[in-house]
Length: 313
Ligand code: SF4
Ligand SMILES: [Zn+2]
Ligand SMILES: [Zn+2]
Image (cartoon, rainbow, N blue to C red; front, side, top):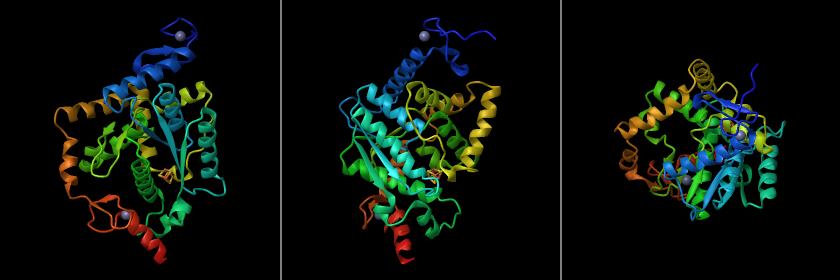
């Protein structure tokens, strides 16, 4: 077997990225991730150094890697961790909170913690039980609570922008699902950057062009400690099926995932699924009479309705 050589310095490489035809040693890889992130931030005009960035952290590799990179790039950041109350037996939520806390403490960074059970009276799996959607998986309720909480926290604490660590695998799988069902509404909302609008915070995804393998390698090589277990509810999800399919394709055609995503963003620039139309659609947003968050329902927002059902038992 031939030794991989770093394309920058000629030393032994630790990672090869076939889709970029690039192999790098540890130091140059860490540097590459940081430089590329800065490039994406500028390319999609996500935020500048005077803006306050709230980073949604789960205790997993992607979000802690993202926070680490933004911190090293000297952006003013704070983290937000949402304790979902998942898997008491394996302490999934407790452990992931601990990783987020330790990460923040080591770097002297502020971390805002929202505990769903304390905030809403019930954990995510409990709320999912009362959801009228009647799904067995709590993911729909979880997504709703996370979106609501992240948006509210960002607005209430005066952050300019909310950053999430969605990577290329997440985005390509989401895109694949949306294309499979021609979910035009979702396609119009999928972007590395969503502007602030009517009570919704600006949202950005600075890692959306890195694969999961690349963010994992960053976390590992940087020595970041993170929760390795996946949320137990992720098992068997459609997203994971799509990821597996796309990984097979990537294996046969290196760069397929990136081409799929970038082709979509280019199609948008060419006039397909224009982001602007969200603005038109959302003109009838009203503040929810209970929590004040924007909603199209004309009454309680979906989360407040869910909580009302939960209280009614
Ligand atoms: S897998 Fe489902 S329940 Fe678990 S964190 Fe993700 S959305 Fe929430
Ligand atoms: Zn090197
Ligand atoms: Zn509400």
